[in-house]
Length: 393
Image 1 (cartoon, rainbow, N blue to C red):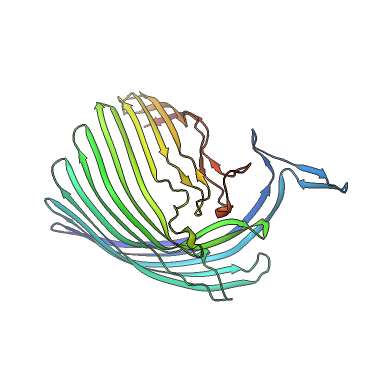
Image 2 (image 1 turned 135 degrees about the vertical axis):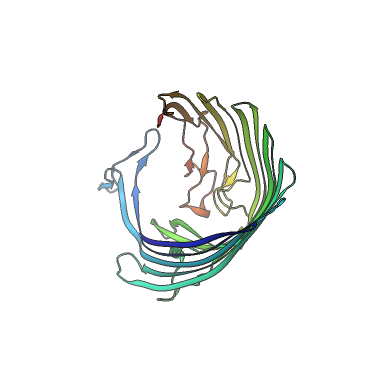
């Protein structure tokens, strides 16, 4: 990939205003080549590649894999170029009780897409696409007291879809290229005194015309991987809490909790998925921990919880919740007159050696089901121990 990026902005303070004007420009070119390699492996204990030879029912000796390698081939051959230009302005207004931030941005993206029609054919489709959109953000903060702030923010933004997701329904004529729009809003409060700090907020988020790209098994060729591009709309409503309490000097307990209700509001070619949960996103997430630091010995113990979630957009596979506990401890020695020091530490990931699956098989997509003899998924890593030394000078 080759990229050239430039940005120029000017900021000026006028009374209680802090005004910014700027522009952004970029040009990017990238090869997009993909290769798929099929390997026969054994994961029953220590992962290894397996060479397999056998004799078929006709007595013919056959070789399925050599050193574990079964087959491999290039599956896509593309070249993508993108040019962007943007202009933006923002103003930060500070008052005695109120702070207000406001910003706008306009941006245009143009892309040139070169895709080979079947790898090795030397037959290429080439076309150009472009889109432009604007973003606006406004936020305010009110100082209710010396310990409590109230705040709210709202933004309307956009994403430019991946150029690799654009197909050619007709030779030389790429499909439509439209921005993905996102609307976000949040209202909350922040509190802090000598020993206790906390936040509470509710939030809302919608994403429209998202061009989702999945790489799935080709139903007509088990050795091939294809790209599935689907337009989706989603909506999320939720609440977040966080707390930090200092029990004594150097000893803190802390935690946070997020609850979110998310669903699809539109799914191109799959209207039955409207109302389903978004894949791989739990409704509940949280963390709790305790830490101690006396400028010599330090230690922290945290527990991260992720609730149940679905492996795919069809919600045909539900993945169980899991919890990961981490431990980190160390001791810092002073080494000299100029504040040099060394910290010797021990860290343990997944202290309780919990088992869990973070996601199902992205290659099976909506065709994956639960309850079979085998399940393909990505597990959390087992217990790992790290010994560390850090020298500060």
